[in-house]
Amino acid sequence: MSRCIPVAAAEACANCGKPDGDGMKLKNCTACRLVKYCSVGCQKSHRKQHKKACKKRAAELKDERLYNQGHERPEGDFCPICTLPIPIPMNEHSAFMVCCIKRVCFGCSLAAQKRGMFDCPFCRTPMPRDGTELAMVQKRVDAKDAAALKFLGDQYYYGYNGLLKNVQRAIELWREAAELGSINAHFELGNKFDSGEGVIQDKAKAVQHWEMAAIQGDIESRNSLGVNEINNGNYERAVKHFLIAAKMGNEVALGNVNKMFANGLATREQYAEALKGFQDSVDEMHSQERDEGTTVCRDVQREEIAREIANRNRES
Image 1: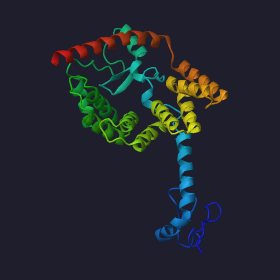
Image 2: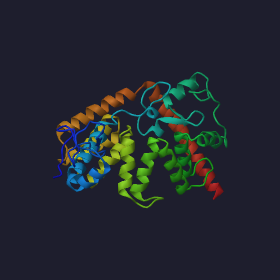
Image 3: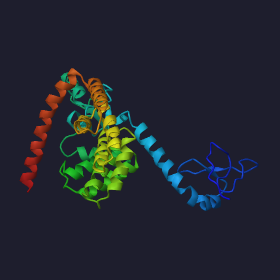
Image 4: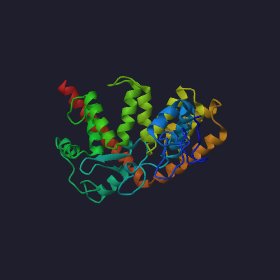
């Protein structure tokens, strides 16, 4: 009679009972790792009996990975000069350098300018002039640089740098970037599958992309997973995601924990934990130079955006 023997209980095939050894190597069920089999045939024969326990344990293993990993921000979220994590949203506190594909915080950018250096503050490459930025990025794209592919996708999505807005092309580039390991590309793809913009709406695929990014430390994807769980009525799972994101510096996630606490869906202790963790994260990211640099560079960004809008209006 077929049995379902846990690996910890006996090193024997869960279907036929043959023991490990004597030239035979048992293989784990790759989904749950609860049982072992001597052959593919035994695994298939045992599938009906094992399916329920396998599915349950596989879900538990997935949750362990989802909630226990991704508590540290990825390397790309740190300024390569001061080595501090960049506040969220990063595009409001840093600039992407197309020459070296690094994101430098505004504090370090301003400090370099005060020393009379107006080239890239990290690699010292002269800043690109009008029309040369995309050419610099294209070299990195041709070399299959994931961050460069993500950046070029952004340019197509928003219609920047003289490119016509092309959502389909942006998604193609993000997909390639994600396959090459871009965490931020996974986040963008999750957003598009969630909304159905440029792709057939698929909530399951959206979650898959957010999970891929979240377990690698992407804060915004982690918050999106929390929102998805809220929408599905899974409040305990939601607050776990929000707590992780808040303690990594996501103010939106902190606000979500606050709302859940106000509605009786999170405890006072959970909100206190989120608040303390968020403040600790903010303190780690803060510096006087960054405050000054962010104020100055945001003004420059606004001027650049205004010029971009003016150029589009003239072209139309």
